[in-house]
Amino acid sequence: MVDLGELCGVLKSAMADGGGHKVFFYAAGKHGAGLRHGFIAIVDSRTCQLNFEQFDNDRALTEIPQLNFIKVQALPMIGQNPATGSNPLLDVQHVLNLFDPGRQSASTGVPQAPAETQHRTAPEAALPRSVAAHATPGTAKLPYTRLREDATALLQTYYGNSAPQKIADVVARFSPVTQPAEFLDACRQLTAVLVGTAKANEVFRALSEKLD
Image 1 (cartoon, helix red, strand yellow):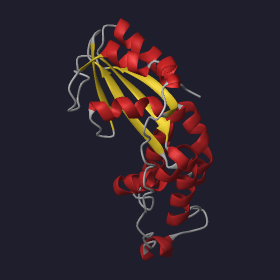
Image 2: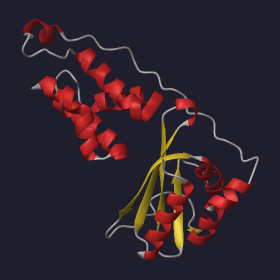
Image 3: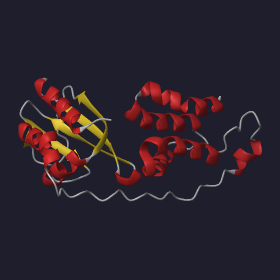
Image 4: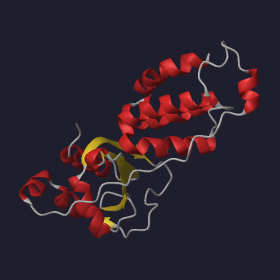
């Protein structure tokens, strides 16, 4: 389990590199309400920008230390300004002081953010007649609804109650009916963000093999 101390350590490393990094963080939502995520842009060795759920600086400084972190990752933004949000820049050392684990453990009465609202997905679309009419046992191992349901079940392990909305977003780009391989690849990429490419490939291997 990643803790606040690890986030501070990654921020310090990005500072030591002279900035130009985005430090991404991912955390579990309260009561299994899915994934929360954001990033801290380390502009240079002295300044940073907070980007978390469209919160202003004051709210973000309160919310971020209370998160149950899953993963922290720094990515260099070569030739790019990492500060892409709208919040004013902050002194990064000031942020680190506020995020200090010792300070946080001693503080009490910090307000908690409400759990994310569970998204509801639209009713499943009916499998087109043309697909059903021409399906054969060898080519229709995974009907549209089954493929979507199985992918949703896998994502729920990592995204909790946000998984159905994540799947709905993927379906908007890649139909499980006409683009099943692309659909699964997009789902695999969502998982790779949290557990890495190798683990994501392992998680989705069984579904991918059923498409072959």
